[in-house]
Amino acid sequence: MALVRKNNKDAELAQLQQVVDKLNLEEYLNTQSLNQVLIQCNIERDKNNNIPLHPLVLNTETWQKAGYYDPIKGILKNKTDEEMYYDRVLELYKHVYEKNKPFKGIVVCITTLKSDDEEGGESKTVPLDSRLAIILGSNIEAPDSYAHEIGHLLGLEHIYRSKEDLEDLQEKRQKIIELNNKIGINKERQKKYIDDCDKYKAKNGYDCPERKEVVKKFDNEIDNQKIESKLCLNVIQVYKENKYCFGKESTINFMDYTKDHTNRHLFCKWQWELMQRDIVKYYGKVQKVEI
Image 1 (cartoon, rainbow, N blue to C red):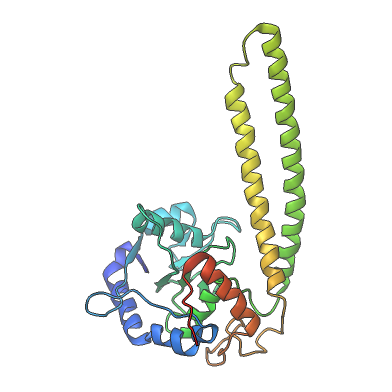
Image 2 (cartoon, rainbow, N blue to C red):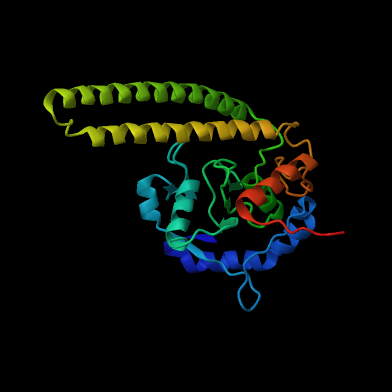
């Protein structure tokens, strides 16, 4: 996929197509990165064996008004910590290309744009079936960035822990406690309301007119809180599974941080196991080989 601005669509598409044609990404993933994990990557090709770029057209005025684009700097930005440009891109992709049937695989989206957080790419470990990897303008010519972002989608966190990571982990633990308390309170309120409606019906011979609507509202609120709690639990689980940590920029692991993109060459065995599990569960299939 190619995320391009509407007012500069053709030029940006042409630039990105040149990058894709030069990068030879499929060979890199299958011989220098994902092959370590026994994962084979097949990138979609057209009848001429070229890798086509499917455009995602960004309307800068609309995105600016929504809070996801800075027209002065010409960059993507997060509206809030919870409302991220990543989710906006995923929403656009689904609207344009998945109206009928979801694609079972990983979607790589490249763009000439950069972001306000100065990262080279964006992807998510949670939800566990996340499948969009965005490679931003600063890193589109760095093949290790593609392996890094795909690693995130397949359940890998960074091989180091930042202060922000530890704070996020603590926030998620606290959030679960708060959500479970809210769920309990809402269930009690719902039960009391139902009991009151039953008494009203016994006394008057007919039910509370708004009963179904109110009960459904309670159900929806409880369901949303359960979903949010589960996402927090998933974040904690991902951190637990990524149990080995090292100093930042101290390894040659694909999930480490790098400045020059020349020193990331491997996934560890425990990372293989997490990635293989996620591939089978969410994205691909297993091919058994008899020896």
